[in-house]
Length: 263
Ligand code: F6R
Image 1 (tube, rainbow, N blue to C red):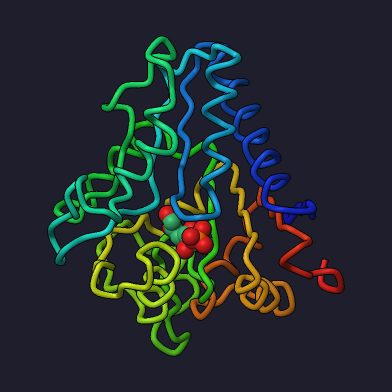
Image 2 (image 1 turned 135 degrees about the vertical axis):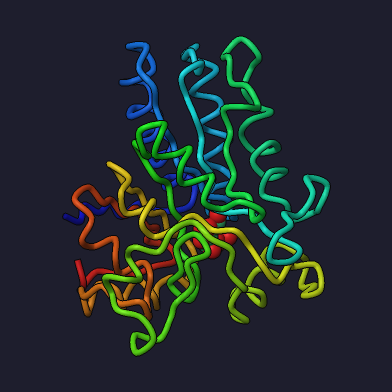
């Protein structure tokens, strides 16, 4: 069931997204219950993480029982994650934008943050299942409609059911993703963008109890429009599977994206 919220701009989207995550996390953590939060990287989330860290700190939430599960990490080859010192490392991104901003007395420790490891992707799924699955998964959308690094696949090559069941694994990045990420995150330098990544599976994402997709770039209008026009889950558009999720919310910005006739 789709819920959507149209907000004026990036700042409003970031505040609305942070508020949803904070409320969901606080409702569990303040009762001493565990909370499994799925995290995304990328330009969409930069300001959201600044606000979220500020909320956790200001409201003195005890994060002892928070565990975070990142959607993906770049890999140098099919088995080796980029080192934390790599300029595009998602480990580094998460530390700079969220984890290092949390005050020590919030009790969030390194061991509570999980990233899929290209050397052993199935371990991530086992650990996540043992922890009880995701309470909330935060998502951005690629310009080609990918979620995490689940890249579009020709529907002739895989059924929708098999695509939705894909586990956490290593993938070769689509050319379009390499080109987009070179421009957006590497000053246009294609050689800096790794060719592989470990990505959370569609299965783990779609099993989250709550999914939250944020969109704020003009290039995202095209995949969102296709998703909302057709309303059929297809491997050609990985984000389309979210429409069948029981608790799916989309927040998008009116200054860059127009979905008026589709929602
Ligand atoms: C990031 C991720 C990607 C991004 C998407 C949008 O962890 O899994 O799917 O969410 O590519 O990226 P930005 O926000 O940079 O436009």
